[in-house]
Length: 550
Image (cartoon, rainbow, N blue to C red; front, side, top):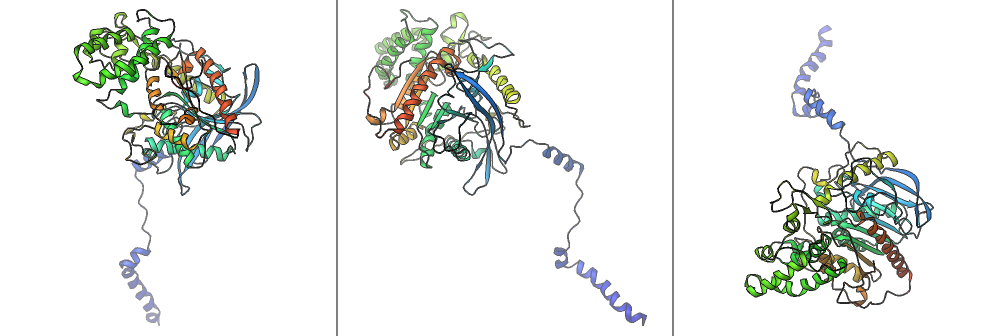
């Protein structure tokens, strides 16, 4: 009896080890988790403490007001993030922005909105945000090193808020903008990749806040102008026709920087002349900078261009004649110019112009001067114009974001995407039309295509005479080769200011810029509402076409 009852039990006991050792049992039986090592646990704790950009969009708001031309404008300042998504809806990046919206603005409004950004590539937009047309700015003097904190930050009577709402965008990898999830940074680090990200960010903002019926504008500075050329075309291809594009201190064509090409020397010559005029290095100095610039333009497009085109076959007599005229315009010695084969690059000019006084001139703004440890060196050891302002801009923006806007995050505000390890930029660009992708982008081609497709698209090029980073004569050359017909040329306008790359550092120039922009915005919005496209304007060979008085 006992044996009968035990038999099934014994049989089962014998069978269990056999099943446990079979392949089927190995698959069905969960393995015991391996205990995490101390090193693994420490790594998990560190990773859990990392600061990440939010997938869910964030926003904080602050009410304030600013007085412009004697009238008070109440507004809402906001700081937040826009989540960028790919065509499948997967979140790929979080784009940080600050925005200034006039009180009473509602979805569906026909009030203009402008998207602003700096360049680099790899720069956030706190320069424009704190220095140009926002209702709050850091006040600067002309042209001096800004003293250490506390800084003079306050309401901006030259704000554009009376004409347009303002949205400042930070490129992905800069500021608080970051890739999300498994999206790699290189997905945004390139000419076309960057333009695509900004297009998605702008489309998202316009959709989220109901601004599809608003007149829409772009305002980019430096590399931001190259972005604007590509972006204007990309947005138009995606169904968003712009009313206007403002190009501030432009560089739209990197092709002329290739070794062996002479265009870069032509581009710089009028800026050299303006700088020599400012520092009183010109004999028979004219009364105003515009006069010496006009002389330099004429020389650059005539005898100088002809001489450089001859290369090494130029005659001694012509070389001597051209060097003499270059010396008169730039303040450099004739022998120095001849030893440089009539091709003086920017660092040499910065060092040579004031060599007798052991001073160098700035790159972003040649009104600024610096002192090198080695006065006999070949090039400046630093850029005085950058040293003079950087600390003030970084500190004042950091304080404004935290103390006034109350934006909280544990992410570090990245002053440049180049700070990240392994940063590289893809310079290839697929311009509109037939042909292979460009290895050195020229998005004036894109902008020209956008202007031909949209007869109401206005373009305003704003330039500083003392900008040596993006010389204005190069901008004139790039925009002058968009191959627009007469009617389209009427939509292109130029302005010039006694300032450098960041033209708004000069308070007088900022005031004039605001006046020029106010007139231009009124015209752009009015023309878009008229029944017929704008008519062609006559042009003058003495100055760039459609130059606004300033």
